[in-house]
Length: 275
Image (cartoon, rainbow, N blue to C red; front, side):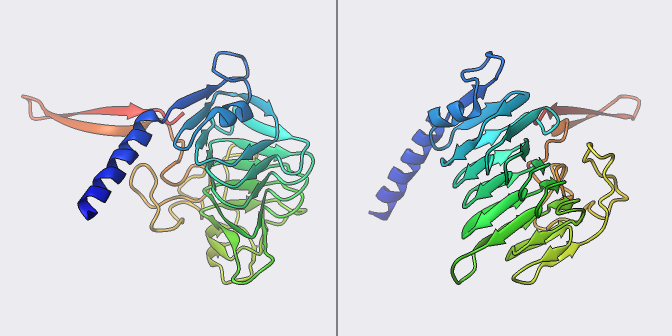
């Protein structure tokens, strides 16, 4: 019976994977949908909603186990006058810039936001309430309240987690993570309900005020959670360009060494863009 149950579960998993689809969103009209919410509404668990460059003025509700993948914070922006711009209870959001002129950038009760830049919000960058959600390898910058703010109504505490993130110039100049029980390996000042592990309060030394790359001289370089790796196999950096989902270009996917007759070696590589 155990073998039969396992076999049926495997068949169901393979069927689900086989029908998972890619949904293309392009506000200019070249995709299947012109709004991100339209793509989400048409998606099913396991799907990927791929969003092409553009400024998407809409408030999103993300309540499905789907991946919503932007084309980079530099060119793919989600903005609204709502509080919040994004309401998230499932799924994964990655490779976007997010802002709100009406309040929080994102309210997250579950799911994950990874490798995004959340900035210029009139509220908090990310707000957790009774949350099991996570924010990872994000830059939270220039928000009017905290970069990430967590609170809860009950015990044991569930206020979400932030890992490998950088928070700068929030709440009138402070870095500010506040009330996050699961705050670890991040850059920015902390006022947490629990103890915060490996949180540093130093300038991350961004390339510029709008370019969030860091160099080996940054205190955030190779300073993320040791369990997390960058695409090249090194320890994760903090911030947008760190972690397995880092949108680095290109990503080397294979290497082949060719021994030449003169004794030299030719290295041939294959690579793939993350965007």
